[in-house]
Length: 593
Ligand SMILES: Nc1ncnc2c1ncn2[C@@H]1O[C@H](COP(=O)(O)OP(=O)(O)OP(=O)(O)O)[C@@H](O)[C@H]1O
Image 1: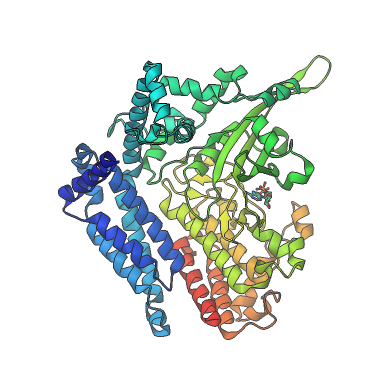
Image 2: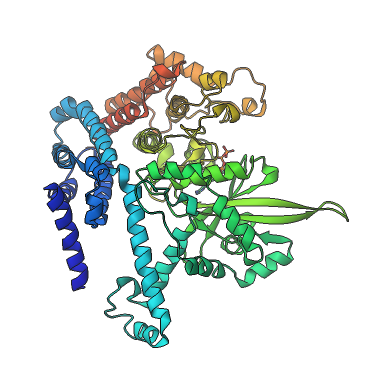
């Protein structure tokens, strides 16, 4: 324990000595101030999360050698100023007077944007530093593990002192040790290529060979045998280990490792599930566990052995999902994204299934599954148009405030994709069916099956994709997706939320040759431009909106018009949309105060 405390002090000293800044002190002051904010709570919370990342970063910077690196010192220069600005901004959010709101609303949104950009700059070496820290911890763990296995007596001593005071906290208790090894297994499941190709900066990760072998052995269960007998080959199983390993190691194209290194956020470790584990979680993919079906497969609700509820998207080759390349791209992109309004990808699974075509021929098909955190309250679309709309208990159906909160959350997720993810990501399938709601009605953007990164140089090879009714007409003409294409789709979502109407009527959805796919868009745009917003509004939240509600929905309507401009360059950036929705929400909140 004493050793741990000393380590912590040493870290602080290292950073403070080298920079002359008590950044950790400043950070804890900001975190305290953030607890008392009365306005812009969500934006402050996001800022706090990023500031916490800076704190984690500083704590990882315990190696003085690293702090001497020019690129890191440069990235951290100006940190004091940024933190002071962040403090001033956060404390200004304590003031809740109407006058303050009137004069400061827009200015604050601008300041938040500026500070977030500065923080992103400070965090740009996060992946490399985190990688170096991880390597250091792995080496420490591997050394301890080697020490503990070299003599059985030593191992017994470790067990005997498991719950007390082993000097290495990672070996302090058996359960702690096994959970560390589980998370290690998860970390190691990332292909080597994705473990930050940082040869110009730091030594590449060396995964201890013994640990790799161990991780494979832990994956087989009794149930696997049953599935082999039923004609399944789980590509992650021992019988096809070589294939499994090369599949996984090939999973992320090597050129993506550079992207990962550039990202200011570390790729999340994606867990590799076996078919047996997922079959068990879903009662063998039983019908009553089915949540919904999309173009690319079926989604099931499942429960993992630890009790964690998940949604399992099962994609088959028949479903029209394009193939392994797209699956890899989806997992790669999704694992790089960390945002409170983006559905968390927990893991995936690939299995081979034998299908008998005739007495002589057997065809081998691949099935791919993705495991996500479960979103208990379904999709925004379900609440606007599904059976739950008849239920007055759906707050989405009944409340303008909730609808605007959902739009705001989703817009923040898209803003993150466009402006903070590195490389930037274009979702290409923004629609209410892909905005999911958790048990607290917090929105999460989902479905990255069509997402592309902005540095995918050869857009020519990527077919135009999206959902009719939300597709940007400019993208349809040029074939080149841009962040502005997502902005257009989000404009259509805003109109749908305001009007409660789908952009395409049922017959248009069915008829792929329908020549007027944008009826909601063109009808409502005309009405809004003519100042007739009231004629557009869904009357389920309230028959007559109050003045504040009207101000809010009017602002949303005008923002939607702006998003639906024909030319991408005339549309607003996602960050402006976030600011306007934030303002719209403030109007509604005034109503409730
Ligand atoms: N993580 C999740 N938690 C809860 N429900 C989910 C989750 N992911 C998807 N669903 C449900 O499953 C349905 C089908 O999802 P899926 O993403 O396969 O298709 P889609 O988005 O409706 O359409 P498409 O993929 O064809 O564009 C969704 O509408 C949603 O209701």
